[in-house]
Amino acid sequence: MSSSMLFMDHGVGGSPEVLVQSKGPIPDVRPGEVLIKVAYAGVNRPDVSQRMGKYPPPVDASKIMGLEVSGEIAHLGEGVTGFSLGDKVCALCNGGGYAEFVSVPVGQVLPIPKGLSLLEAAALPENFFTVWTNVFQRGKLSAGESFMVHGGSSGIGLTAIQLAKNFGAKVFCTVGNEEKVQACQKAGAELAINYKTQNFVDEIARATNKAGVNLILDMVGGSYIQGNLQSLSLDGRLVQIAFLQPSKVEVDWLQIMTKRLTYTGSTLRPRTAQDKAQMAKELLEHVWPLLENKRVSPVIYKVFGLLEACEAHVLLESSQHIGKIMLKVDA
Image (cartoon, rainbow, N blue to C red; front, side, top):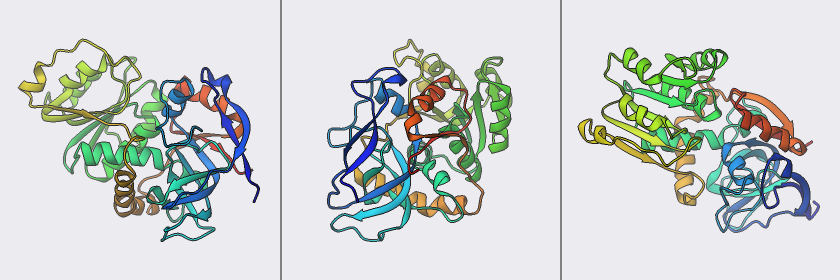
């Protein structure tokens, strides 16, 4: 095996055009890590933020972008058990996915669900870890409750719709056009609201007989925050995972008291290896069987070559896609 690898470098940051191919050393494998020869990598919003210089990686993480991959185990670090050389896996990375090789803590590595391809498996980690920890661990969604996700046609949105539906919730979402409405309804949403022609607060009030929904997963922020508070039920929960609109807004917080609301949020990348390993364990137990039984499936919109990462970022920022955008790394 060569001592160097190809990766995509974003330099000091900027527009998608800053992404250029470069060569560097294959990452060292520390105790408790595995080295993965990457087949596919997912393209995600945090990658865009990092490329723009707005989301620096943790101090001990790779400076290369890429938070999820699939591929083959090429080396086992000291103390690693449960996997063998050559195993096909997918993994939640702390960075480094836009490259031919990446080292990952073994607790964040999962087997490929039976029946899924390497391409499909690479589309799982970032979305499924994010949805699991925010909707089920933090948001405590349970069977019989109602749930709304904004950005329903995104990778995270479609994952949240499918998982919430499979765990017995009534699901609502917001999207930007009729094609996305249909995609979300196919995924299991009872109501998909076109925010360009409908007011989601009015539509949720109508659909729930003014009771509101129990849980909202929001990645928009800005003007949506006030609407979210209005759309929650008594004892409702709002989980914030991103801000596509500004995070500084004027809000009337009275409903937090009058409806006994909980407003929380999280980011995934800075969580400890122990936290991520627990998420992986719960996904393997509760979600991998749903994937293997085809009750839940990743939705892949388009696959680019690794050297086409610029075009992949342009597409992601356009928000024209439905589901995941992927990079094929191993030619």
